[in-house]
Length: 340
Ligand code: NDP
Image (cartoon, rainbow, N blue to C red; front, side, top):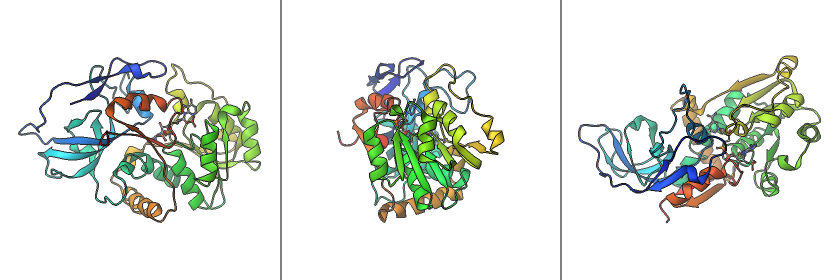
């Protein structure tokens, strides 16, 4: 059973060498008397929050630290091989939390969701139909309270969450601009995902000036994925009664100390609502069902485009995960284990 283990706690930027491929011999059976589920992983999801779990969290916060010497865990799509749990049977396809191994023994099967429809690619449940999709959907519709005609800015806009947020905003009738870290990504935002505008933040020495160019009237909604200097410039350009949905701050995850935000007083002057949220609060709620039904239809009708960046083989997973922090991925970063 090949697996990817964390060598030791990580500080600074994560590296491929922080992880190690190992191949221990394990029993591929569910222990009798347990309610565990044994699955074969088909697709692994690479997500930025995994970097937070690679450090020693003391005290543990919302996330637990990974345990050095043990496999990483994260979202995946998997097939049930053996089960002692009444909700799952051999052959079921599920998405949820498993370990970075060929086979995972899931001892908390309540973290798994059965996949009911298989007419769209199964890998979509690591992205547009899974955790990042629900993040984009709940974050945009619930936290941003969008109205037709509003001005929306999305950072990390070509990533798993960002490219969906931008398209939801277009479907709502908003004006949408995104920022991303390469010209290739900027072209994709404008030509494939239908953003009204996009810019490469690495080529903008003055982010405030860039935002003023794209939003001469100011920003009503900011979908925050990166934090730091981008958030600081956005605060200067928000409109009165604007909303900021704080989804994540990837620019901060590898730093010892948070950096770059000085303009928070604008929250007061402009009566901005800035609200953080976690996708986990929306699982198994009505919005989860509405999300899945609506987004499945959008995909089938071609109303939203979805882009995956697929790495093949468990061996490629460390590089794929590290690539999130250099912007190597275009769209959702997934690792396919079944087509090796
Ligand atoms: P992405 O697919 O967007 O991948 C990460 C991207 O972030 C990279 O491709 C890169 O794109 C960009 N990036 C990396 N480092 C920096 C940096 N220092 N400054 C600016 N941009 C950077 O990831 P996701 O869509 O999965 O996640 C996006 C955000 O949403 C993250 O902050 C994540 O933590 C958060 N999140 C929050 C959830 C919640 O429940 N609140 C759930 C899921 C995700 P580029 O080339 O454009 O720089």
